[in-house]
Amino acid sequence: MDGIVELQRQLIDYTASLFHEGFLDEQFNQLQQLEDENNPGFVVEVVTLFFEDADRLLNELTKALGQPSVDFKSLDAHVHQLKGSSSSIGAHRIHRVCISFRNSCEEQNVEGCLKNLQQVKHEYSLVKDRLETLFRVRG
Image 1 (spheres, one colour):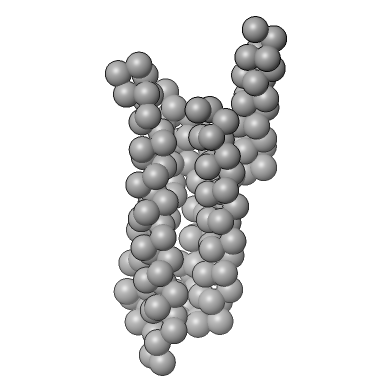
Image 2: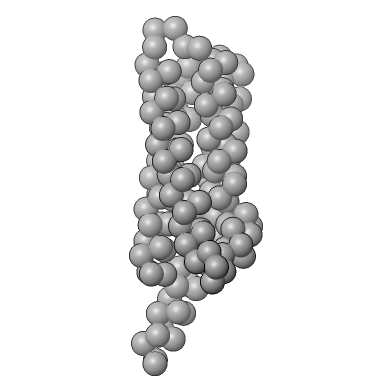
């Protein structure tokens, strides 16, 4: 029994650290509240869809920024989508970088866009790793 209590405490501590480090915000708590015995895998399902969407959007962004002539309107539309989907799961740090990314799109600043793309990829990789760890621990 002590082992279960210890695991639960570690899970709570780990989840709290994700909020403390700014990876997640209140929206993630709201997602968790929608999960119940009728829909036990709800959070994992929603976050998995986010991962699929984000992977697709990051590929689109990478492709768009690799073109000789960047279509900033299209680029901004993809960033806007990523900003919305990261916000919907509470991925706060990705959401924050997307705001800066959109500003670079508005300024038609290719260098700024490339920097933001690298930052978004970095933040996405971190949050994906941490959420996958959380889901493994949660069982």
